[in-house]
Image (cartoon, rainbow, N blue to C red; front, side, top):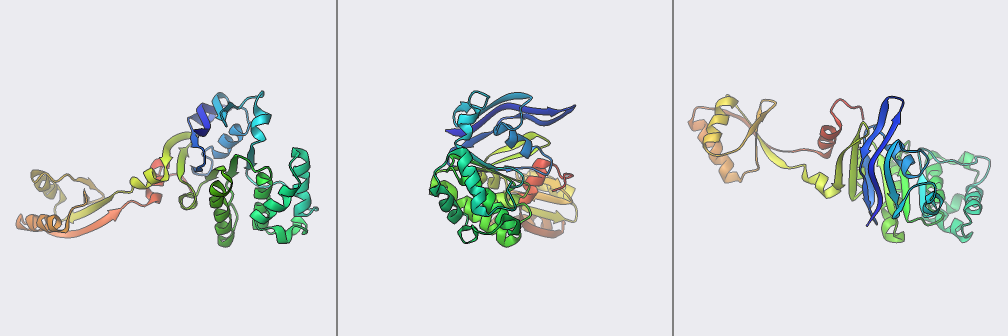
Length: 303
């Protein structure tokens, strides 16, 4: 079952189509990484899923229901979210901030202490939020989103502005949620390395358009090993290899070959040498996830 489904989802501001014909499928129980460069339309998409922004076109289903005015409140009772930056009253303590949310949402009072322990703020619950560090404020925002133990948790750039220790702590918290509470978590980010350490499913958007959606394993599978060969005359070498039924393509003054056994690689270098070609370099390569991300989102895009 998909806990979120969008069909042909669009959002237009003026003449600019910020989200273009987006079809997302978020499997239940997954950590779903929503990736794209800054300005790609991630936050706009998440706001539409939450009913905070009205779509220009398309349909949204959340928890099996259409996200419309009739169903919005019943759906949102089962959804927690942290969009952009957490909201809080700085002159109140962390516990008092959560009590306001608990009262408004008619959630059991015991949940306050439980979520403070989950996000490791139980020792700081009596401290005014204005005195919290940025990482503590992010964790308080996460506590607020978790307060009703939602089936779906949507987090927009939850590690933004955190130091390395804070990023690691937030990542550990997020990774534990599906198994511990049966939640589905959607995490947006412009950092592939972050999503790579958290998610099991990934969607990548570029300028509002979906360019990849599948498991993280499928994304990794694009990172195939290959051999890069450089000779004193690549054009002649390519012709000679074609005669031997060895496929290759030329890129940046190298011939790219599939991975071969050591024995066959040695035979090729000997064959080229016998045909009066010098083998300048032969190396094994693999595309990094960053390379794949840049290919999908456009090399000119600023990360």
